[in-house]
Length: 112
Image (cartoon, rainbow, N blue to C red; front, side, top):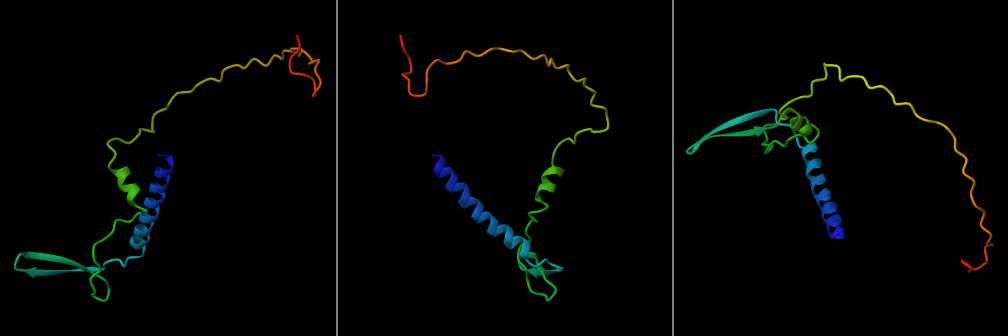
């Protein structure tokens, strides 16, 4: 399952990175043309030469700012959060003698 999830995430990253590159490189519309049709007015975005640019993409660099603007509350950083005192650390050294092993490297692991 982890392998398939890894491949799916890699494929998703490859596909969305192309969309972000197109969004960054798309010409920005400098004006709009309103066309009056039989079904109602249609607005077409145009570039500096008067050519249609298509739909406007949301800037991927600014999209996270939009999410931040939609958060219900902002943290209040004006009040004091309080001070905490450091705890004392006991630095006494204890000496515990270790038992030396009587076996050599090639000796049997356990003898009765």
